[in-house]
Length: 430
Ligand code: UD1
Image 1 (cartoon, rainbow, N blue to C red):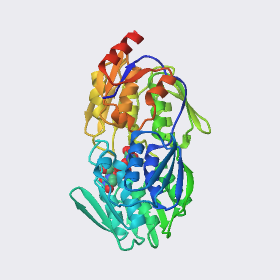
Image 2 (cartoon, protein in one colour):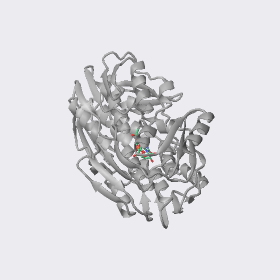
Image 3 (spheres, protein in one colour):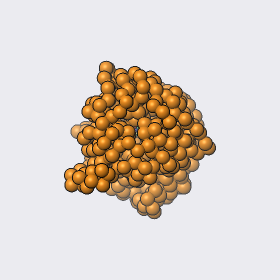
Image 4 (tube, protein in one colour):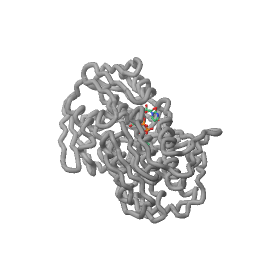
């Protein structure tokens, strides 16, 4: 099993380039099979989640040609099956996008119920409600979701809660339905907008993405396109917190600063210098940071996917911070691990009460999920001594060359697979 071994204490200094957004890529790779023409996708992050999905679409027959690490040519005309194998799907939650894409194109999809990070109960009732409103019959048999329709037709759909996945999934199916669809209470996340832009570039007619009302006029078919995936705001935000927590000075490049405003504002509030450029942000921290309160909300609020990283940062800040999670109920598993490093954190209901300590101590800890894992790496880099983060398979799902990028900023971090490599690392850094 892979792990990171980290010697903490180095402030992160330098420049880092951010890759394409994992969550946009997962939807866009899937949407690419909705045309029979060839789609060229650029800026696909080379992380295990997108790689598993590329493999899944090739297993149902799509032609996937990897041109380089971040570019792929996808052709959906060769798809021979609308039934997706559980082996691929259990690993990634975004497999549910295959439902919207296959249902839109073939009016028939069979996809196992998704897996993914265990951060709480993650129902997909709103996705299914949307498909039914578009005229599909949806049944669940032995863990398999079967969606089928003679014709998909436009509908007026009001989402009960703001859901990124449901918004994108309904948008994909409705793009090839007959007539007009309106999605109300839609998610406004940058990756929702990116998927709408991608579908429009393929010939769809989608208006209003980025607001809470999305209007879709169905078209008969979609066509080829060359498209570049938007930068990953969560990878960028993670490096921003890493710069803050280690009292470093990092220029985070190839990003859209507007997408990061909630994070920039919080870091500025606790005492970081945050400077925005056209496509970069510089975050530096010269002194011990201060407390704040954070509540996760749908975009443009503070992202739930950044909650553990800001929590780890606040574990070292002066004063008492309260971090409230309002999207997923099980996102505080990292707090127990931080406590093992000396953090003073108490979780009550959906809030973590964090009494900042002056220093954390290295420990052997385990990544409970993707973003919590990244938060523990931040803690390890800010702590005294050696930290070993086990189960980094979660982190590799969403961060490309994470250790390498952090080393480029001066961190002492190695990805290892065997215990004896940990000893070697200890000798090297001592
Ligand atoms: C996506 C992101 C994930 C991020 C989340 C919130 C991907 C692959 N994943 O997940 O990283 O943390 O958005 O920004 O893009 N809900 C329902 N019924 C539904 C759908 C959602 O009750 O049918 C609830 C969920 O349990 C959750 C909330 O709505 O409490 C938001 O979930 P949603 O936005 O759908 O998250 P995902 O799309 O799964």
